[in-house]
Image (cartoon, rainbow, N blue to C red; front, side, top):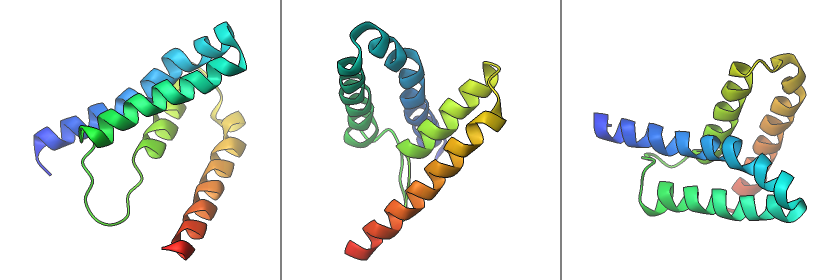
Length: 111
């Protein structure tokens, strides 16, 4: 992987949790549940198009997880930086890992 691809991948991975933490909650506060749906469409859709359509995140090999890891690590780091308790977040983190593993297993049975 070249330095340019590393920078592009880092920026592509940074954009997603940054937009989620910056915009998602505000959209839900302003427009309620429909704001959450709009945030999901706009934020996830736009960053997916940037990362995969324009190829900002470099992927090699057969197995990869990109935007989910970026969101998880980025939002967890942002919460810790804001002073949130990691202990309170652990049930959510563990549930996310288990859900991802179960989803990967189910998907692997179809491929």
